[in-house]
Amino acid sequence: MGGARDVGWVAAGLILAAGACYCFYKLTRGRRRGGRRLRLRPSRSAEDLTSGSYDDTLNAEQVQKLLYLLESTEDPIIIERALVTLGNNAAFSANQIVIRELGGIPIVGSKINNPNQSIKEKALNALNNLSVNVENQIKIKVYVSQVCEDVISGPLNSAVQLAGLRLLTNMTVTNAHQDMLSSYITDLFHVLVTGNGSTKVDSSFLSLLDGHVPKEILLRALTLLQNITDCLSEERRLATQTAFPAGSLFSLLYGKECAQKMKALVHHHDADVKEKVTMIPKFW
Image 1 (cartoon, rainbow, N blue to C red):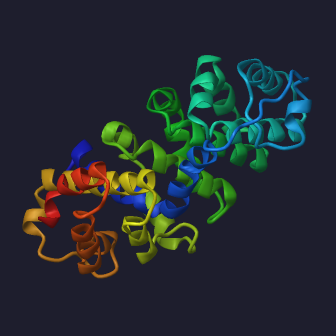
Image 2 (tube, helix red, strand yellow):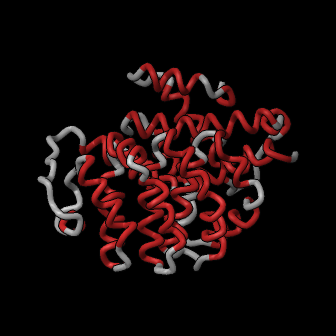
Image 3 (tube, rainbow, N blue to C red):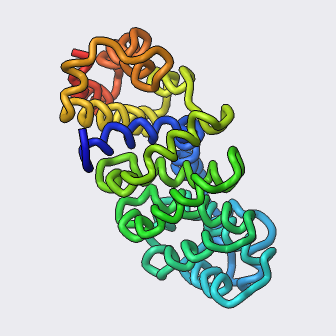
């Protein structure tokens, strides 16, 4: 195996290893909250927007004020608070678009080079939420190499390292940007192998394939599994591999427990879920 295709199945495994359970929960937070009426803040100064409740949604004018503040201030406390506010608001799909259209992605992205580790972490968290939007990924991909280097060279199990892994997870959910990890795969896997429980994935990942899991989470988990299967099929590994090494990510994904869950999902009440399950040929 070699080249970009080799990266395909390896990077797909990385997706699952980088704190997958947390990531899936986080990405759906905005949608679940969207069911209740959200309060818009009245017009306030940019500094005011960095204090108080971070859960209120911002309008375009307020987002613009925060972005200007991030560009103009050198106060680390204000920068960190502004990033937290933007990051929390980026959990909502509408705000993901607004922030991009106002030129916010490069402003937030510039903060990942800040020597202050807390600011770097908050910037990565904001980019993580922004990266759920496919169009945003086109602008965020310029930071992938830097994030990989920070994850590899940073303190093991640090907040910055985990934030970087979550961002890489989102950026490699589809095959569009997986090739960007080609030169970092070995070192990234070393991080995943040596890290603690926050960095690894275990059998709890399979709980995401339970029928009672919210549809948006279930579909994302199935999409990941489909991408891995497709990449392995291209390399003809599924056709030639009789058994994956015990304890590996692939033995987890293609073991008996996962197969049972997939067969149960064929009878899921949602048509989209049933269709997605049937698109993963390894189990049929």
